[in-house]
Picture 1 (spheres, rainbow, N blue to C red):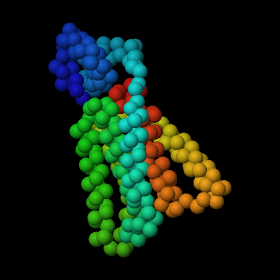
Picture 2: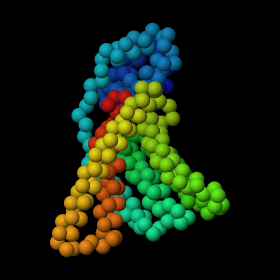
Picture 3: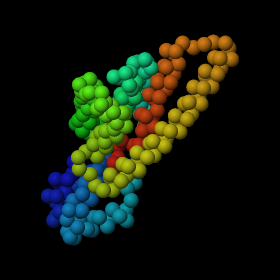
Picture 4: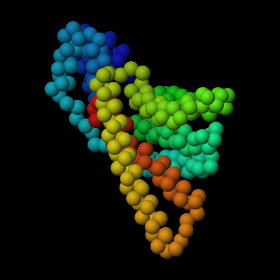
Length: 260
C-alpha cells in the first residue's frame, strides 16, 4: 500500500491530498491511490474530507487504460512450466508408492512461473511474490521430506495434500497480488477474477484436449505410433501452458482486482 501513510498524514489537508492524487495520476498509479484511500476511509468514516473523496470516487469511475499483455513472456514461462511437468510426469514415479509425483507438484510448478510473470509485468510486488514462491517451495519440500517418517496409518494425509497444495498456491497468488492488507472490495474482486481465470483455463483445457486427440488421430490414420514419451510431452507440456495463459488472458497485473 504505497500511498497509505501519505494519505493518513493528509486527512486534514485538502490541498495536500489533492496534490498527492494528482501525483499518483501522473505516474499511472491512480488505482493504487483509490485503493489506499478506501482503506483509510474504512478506518475513519467520520472524517468529512475522506467522505468527500469517497463520494467523489463513487461518482467518478476509474478510467481504464489500454491493456498491453506480454504474450511472449507468458508463452515462454508456459513452455518452461510444461517442460518441468513433462519431466515429472512419468506414471511409474509414485510418491510413497501411492500418488504420482505429478499430482503433488503440478500446482507449485505452475504457480511460481505465474508469480514471476505477474511481478515482471506489473513491475511491483517483487517482495511478496518472492515470499509466496519461497513459501510454496518450503511447503512442497516439507511434504516430500516428512512423508517417509509417517507410519502407514497416517499416510492418508498425502491424499489431502493433493487437494490442499493447489489451495496454498491460490493463497500465494492472493498474497502476491493483495499483500497482507487489502480492502474487502479487493478481496472479493480477487475471488471473482480467480473464478474467471478457472473458467478460462477450463475452456483452454477443452480445446487443448480436442487438439491433442485430433493430432493423435491424424498420426493413427497414417499408421504412426508415437512413443509414450512424446505423448506425455504433448499432454503435460500443453497442460503447462494453460494456467499462465489463462491468467494472461483474464488478469491485468497493472491494476488491482477491484479496478478490473
